[in-house]
Image (cartoon, rainbow, N blue to C red; front, side, top):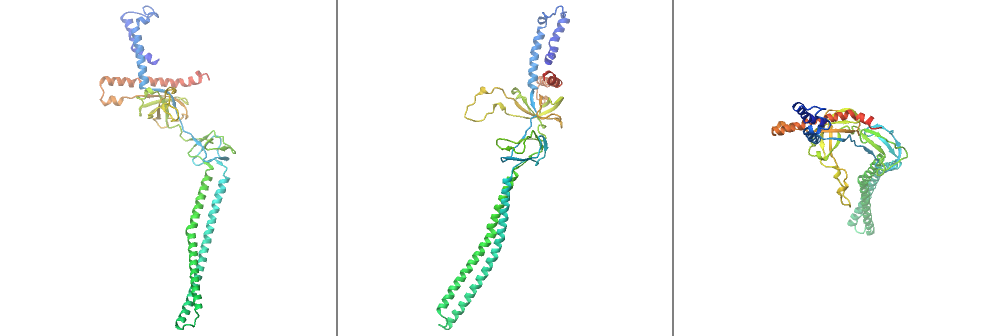
Length: 410
């Protein structure tokens, strides 16, 4: 309607002025309800053509959309293991900080495993003390074996010397017995040395390895125990948290609730524009938006991201071929807009529906001097027509509460 009124001032109104003051035709006399088409046909036709061209240009170069939303990501509260809820530390709706315990699963089994691992470490420590005593014992046995071997060797050397000096004074049988005794004492010495080496190896290598394994088992048991305490991963707020002690939660089939991070949905606006605006939407375009949750307010914004893909065309590989006609609704160009001024979205509830306009600006091309006079004028006209869409957005912002509260019928 606004475009029609604007175009009529440039077409029908001059045509009427010509008929009135040049030809002397007046309303109610020569120009009536039945003759208005014939008298003002040139202005009416030009007005309709100019209106269609103006509307097309405005909606193409300054696109608008009513599918703009403050999307926000929620974090599911899911335990890493299945179990029965033992304690719940938050209410139905409550703020939480990172690391706060939200609820706890029954962990009697994990506590028993942790206690078993601790007992195993204590057992290994006791075995290390026993191994130290075994080393001392082995050292005593080694010293005893050395003494016995030395005694047997000295006695053998003495009798062998006497036998050399005075053959027959020492029976050969005694010498042979002493030789066997020396060999036995040497074996005892080797056994004592081996026992000491075994005790030393057990203390320095085997038992530390067993203790390390026990410590690893303890750490694993501690991790399993910590998994029964479900904590908040980020600062945020738990909403609609109806979990109660006795409920069974499963990480695959059933989550415990959702956590909404702080600042979620307050960074930018996600809008979907028609596919025909794919060549117009650019990063850096100035935009405006008005949201239902904050009526009578125009929020200046800027486009920070334009998605290069249309979600309607995606598919997941399977055993069936694609059928193009199954894509009933055409997709939209996804655009992310952020407020120009700090705290521009303050007061807008995350998830709110909004209406947004984007405005094409050719100022850089015009001031570059690389376009001709006619094209520069045309670009000026394109930029100037953005004010029409800006007026329409403000009219929508004024009528939005009335349409929502009065005309919706609720």
